[in-house]
Length: 292
Image (tube, rainbow, N blue to C red):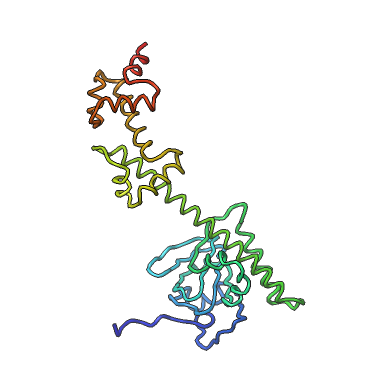
């Protein structure tokens, strides 16, 4: 325990041990300015009161977030809220900017919009851009902030606040979009796994049993099935059984009772009723129709 290294903690920029926190802190620099001083390796560290935004236009970044390490190629954006541990390793051809800004400034801008503020309480990596929010929209804002920050125009603070508002609202939208996409991906993953389990089942299973195998509740499973297919989970199970029954009826000489047995129905009459409910005719009528 005594050998644990203390977490690197900076009140200001990485490597600046003498900086003091300011509620009006704003700093913008090229990524290369500081990273090349440390041979492109930024050790895991935190900033107690500062947001950081890494806008990577080109080059590669190996990003360490806690125990996770991933490599990204530009264009991409990293949003780092205060007190979150992060480390970076850059390729020497890296190009982009780092915006460092006091959390007090962001809080003041979004004090009446808790949804925006709450979306920035963890690290976000953004690397999927589209026509609605192109990467150039962010680089253009950074250029505008740079011009205002280092210029001498009047009402500088007002204009900076306007640019920061645009920038962080756009980031919020991208974060929300990514979360919705992840939610959709998880939904489709559960649905495909459920379909596979239906086909692989050797014995009849209840919906709660299927849900338990997927580590979700039966209610959640039904919600997923309806959102993807418009049908309930049990309807999808029945449809699979009916499809199998149709194959037997069309391509074998098994009797209806034998098919019901092969499909694990306890009662042939129930199988016949279920078949008619979904197909609109009895198994016998379905077979005769195909042969006429």
